[in-house]
Image 1 (tube, one colour):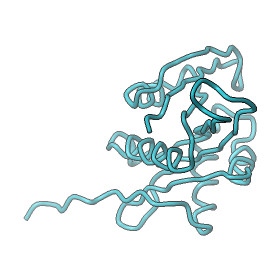
Image 2 (tube, rainbow, N blue to C red):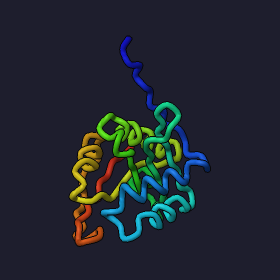
Image 3 (cartoon, rainbow, N blue to C red):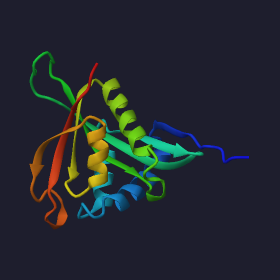
Length: 165
């Protein structure tokens, strides 16, 4: 008999997920942040923050974390539109390269859309090729390079995606 394929489930964040999010986020972003655990704690506590968690056989294996901003004025057809910000996305290292990040990115976009966002933007390290490939394949466009956006002088790249209705 062949091995049974496990299905990745993506679900909303539960209060019991916070230790997993803090631990994985702290490890995943350590090379980009002076204090990744504190940054994660701040993002989780942000008003209106939403997260989705990927599970494999009931075990959390990744997450995506969104924040929101209502823009101060009308833009084109939008009346004071909401912009979502992908604050963090991470997959446990043993499960990378299996499409979990892509599933999380898609789920984060669905959550943003359901929350009324018309766009999603993010900042990622220029050196984080795996993340930049994921975001580009998901339709995000680089719009701005920010020198020294991260620790040790690493540049950041702001990427943007307009969400279709």
